Length: 374
Ligand SMILES: [Zn+2]
Image (cartoon, rainbow, N blue to C red; front, top):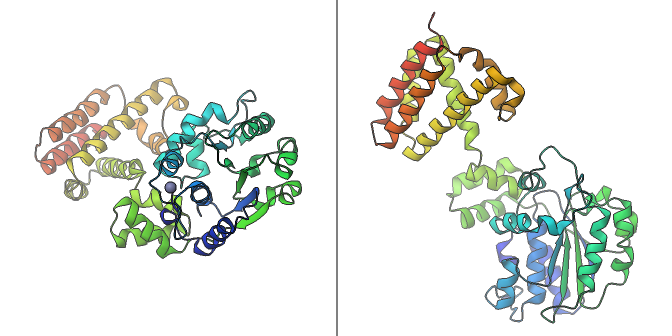
């Protein structure tokens, strides 16, 4: 990526550009940034600036072969090391490289949490194991494929424990010629002194709200008011702003919609249900279908929980909380019908029926089923 595709960091960029233009590139650098400030994209833009044969006006060209290979993560001299699941001692970053490329190709502003999700390690500890040091040394000892610099980006270097870091000290002190090692950290305090003394520190700024908003408008086609809201909520964290702006967690609002319907059903609040259907029917058809599919999933998981125990439900924390309260109302006498009414509504909506009537009809049917005695 180009510097122009990153968020903010203007003073840092001009220092980096200056060092390249004067031929003074430190071979080992530590990029320190608050989470979400964009140290990885900045490191990648810096690397591209160093490698691009057509760099001009303080940026890479973005169009030559080198730039294209770098931005598609297929350049043979660009290497990465990053935290992996710590229980897998035999593994190193190579094992997860496909996932790494996949997440970075979508956006280089991903968070440590996004990464954990990507490799299925939500509840696991991550680390950069000792084995990784050997891998890093080996990668950098190879001849450069393209004849230029070799680059190693060590993402979240704070995940290196002393044994891993110690094995890298010699490499950081005397790397092979035309090698650049960039360590990235969000947690300066956890970087060992021995690493600090061998690297040049590059401290990033926290991006301004306006800079984040501009980035969202340019890259995600969001209107400037929503972009501004997302930037404010994210408090300087670009990855978070992207999540908010894209509303990447529609299931949270689907859960809210479904649970309010169930509340109305339980209270037999017909006015509430009419308002509910009124508000919901203005969503797009795709969104409504998604909502009904989601509701079916919740009902199914409640049934599973009723018969096999709450621990086998495939639900997140807030869904589980809801299911614990809601599951008692779904039992052998009504479950098939609840399920049928939801599926019927789903197919009626898919067939372009009147969403308002379908939703209201479904709500009334569920009223009778969920709480027949009241
Ligand atoms: Zn180029």
